[in-house]
Figure 1 (cartoon, rainbow, N blue to C red):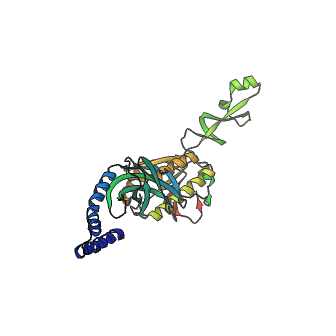
Figure 2 (tube, helix red, strand yellow):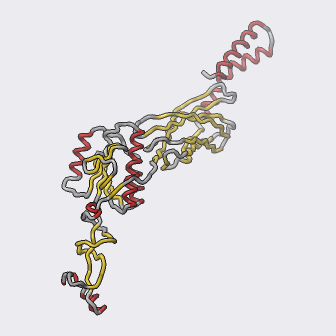
Figure 3 (cartoon, rainbow, N blue to C red):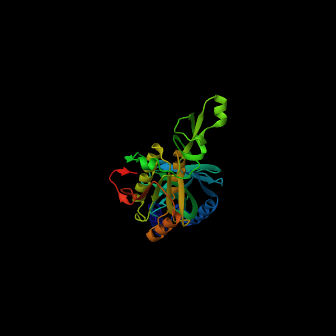
Length: 351
């Protein structure tokens, strides 16, 4: 019971006392109006509640950790009744841990009008945030009584981590690791005859089979063709979420480590494969990262990751997914401060 409702009851009791103690027409009318007011209030609230519609007007698909996100909830009053006061309960829930908090938003809407109320939220963790409206409370003219009923409107916002380059050394063995691929290096030659790396003048050490006869005849000198070096996914980044449980802070820190490591590899022009066990679909997701666009799409998927603590199941899926696969280096990210390179933890990453 609110303060105004409590005050109303006290006023009714005092007026009732005067009604029985004094024979005054004005007191009688006031007492009668006070007694029938709740009936009119209930009828008013019931009619208005049937004419109020709620929807989200602005929920961004993505946000960034530490930066404000402005959320809008639209209220449409389909009736002609003016100055309808309302309260909306907004719930913000972390999609990884399940933790949530709520906020009440107050507003007023006029007849046949659309009204928007805004809520600003500053995310402190990465991952998926579910924004929902689950309760609408409408007040009568005097604000003495209210009518609350449940509604169901929800949206989802992916909160991105902040990237920063990490100290990383890529060895020559990893850079020159040859893997099957449809993409080829523009910096070095190889032995894949299906793609030409460059045409150059003939040298005594060249094989006669590499002479480009048609071009040589046209240029009137012997030219040879060098085969291309295929660019496969020479590095595997395996994201193991089993150790962090449902801790949303560690999940966010891990996403920061994942994004920073992948961004550093992109800057080093190292094509890599990112992979993780997806709890929702019960399968291993493999993602080839060959540029910023691929990284962006991967992070869109990763922020929606659900917790999985069954380490044995994850390992079984990992073994099955990469049985027979060859990589120059395998990086296992288990926590933001626990990264294993080929099974060993290194203070300075060297692939």
